[in-house]
Length: 218
Image (cartoon, rainbow, N blue to C red; front, side, top):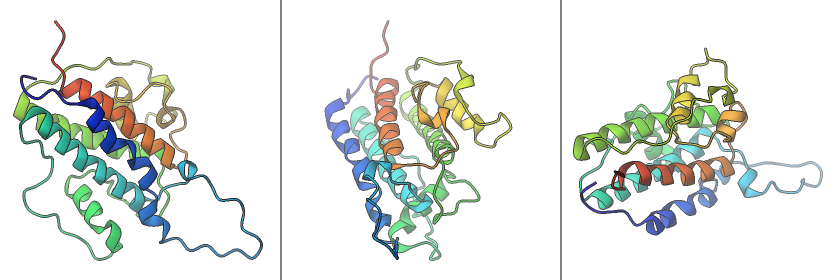
């Protein structure tokens, strides 16, 4: 890039606390009654996330990424539409805008069910769709990005090759967006937890910095 080398520390501050925040919006929506003494609470980093909670987290990440890339390159980076995304009243108010924005970008799957716990592969597929949009936007405003180290170890992906989300996970792995030992590959069908999202945001952020805001090496 010719302009605006990004300050890694500043972007890290934007992303670092997201993992601690993403379960709070939906936590109040869950009312659990116990006949006996309640079990010990699950640590926040191990709590599962519903589709709505994950959508709110991903939308917040997207906003920070696009703001960061815009400031870093001094060029407008935006993956959405200039017009406001239409919000659907069937979704809870606290998640409505996030769901609308993700659906407008076709980041959410067609069978999105916000109240159900999301799986790792579902969230990974949404992330890969979004990263493709970032790539398209960056190529329009700044040309071809830097190449990331790739991996050919598709054996790490625990989904069947016929699974609808297999291609997205393969792209994440071979594109170098996540480490090969990531639980998104090794245990793809397990429920998504807060730690997963925090780890993904942190790793993807570092890859974005390498790909879009550093001068290519000779």
